[in-house]
Length: 432
Length: 145
Image 1: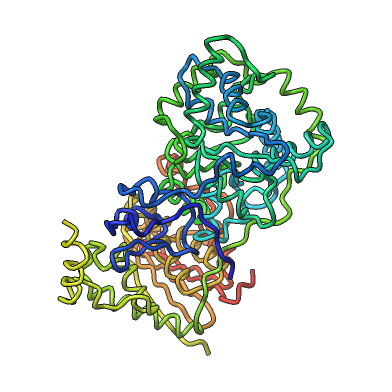
Image 2: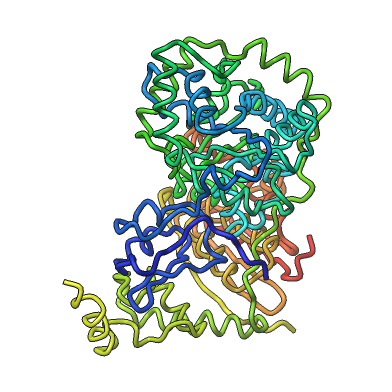
């Protein structure tokens, strides 16, 4: 079975066993054993709910620093559009680009072009798609992983197109390899990420193969230094970046929860944010509803990517800033359009393999599986149904299944065993 | 002869739009846990959901019976309600007696029964006007479409 890479690390020493992460996990992927949280690899979809919930700072994103890319001859930043809403208003996008150069990147990629290319490619794809609708967006890695784990049949509706960051990754390598005469391996395409899930998707793309990007750095890691340099640039009016990274409203719309602003009008789009809402909508799609929607854009974070777990600013504030930025901008701009016209006919945006379902191991024949399910139902009926979590599983239902699969024992329930209460006393009371 | 492995019965109430669809969600979770092929699950979910909606929209009350055998999934939906006068027309795509209100909620496009038939390997529809309607659908587990 595939070993799934994840972007989080539970530091056992700091884990208080408080069960907050276990209760927050939307895929029931966490158990608390011996007072410590443990993740079940196959079930984790990297949404980051645990990371956000942990009050102990025991769950950390596994991120890299810019220094770790030191071996590359040339480092190129591919900034998530979210980045441009993270700074005070007087710090303009070109100052932020300047800041990125100041902290050690050798160039800043004009990502707005790749985003615009993606929009056009999505529109073309949706026009040509003859399979079941809606077509589902591939941009949010958590949504893709959710499909792999919980909605395998809907994977065929996932757009078979590289996400914008991957399109940018390939373009960065091509461009600078040609310009500098360096082999592509010596050029680092580094995503400046607003969420940890993007980092994971670069490390291990859901569609298999290798990412065109070489890694990512989270916004918080470079924030302070970028801000300091950007402020200086804003004050002195000196900007090292040779272009304005945010020239059109098109780019801004990629980091807001609204559907992409520049998609054609004859398509019906729907945008859903927040994992529980995405789950509800996928349930509906599975029932055969929403067939009249052409393209479904899903983001695991409430209010979209601006609420990613590697952002600095309050999501509403950053959106207000992006909107005020977009207010003065045209929907598209000539520089972007010229570059898009040049690249669009020559690039292939399709992915070779569609992401495959994460296989859960099926044990025994159907009769045996029915028997185990009935056994789990029987055990569940003995449990209190309070989902207190004291057994170390997020709900009585999950607990019942853990018992049938041999991963837990009925005696882990405080209602069924005094031993468990003593054990919990020993684990938790001595801390105070 | 196929062997029955599991059966469940659910009660359906008229105009219960809030809870409509819950049964198909529950059946989906059950089949998923049993490791049934996802294509088969999708067909079962569509059949259950459409049948559920039919009862919620048109009938007084009904029962959905789900039976899993080692060969297939059987779904029977029996309702007490107005019944269907013209069975052939009811199976025509786009034919519907839905009210504007139902259409506003995204239903009543005359796709329910045709959709159930399309997703079934065997399908049966019986009805008596003024008494009720019974839809029977079987979906094979070997995933033949």
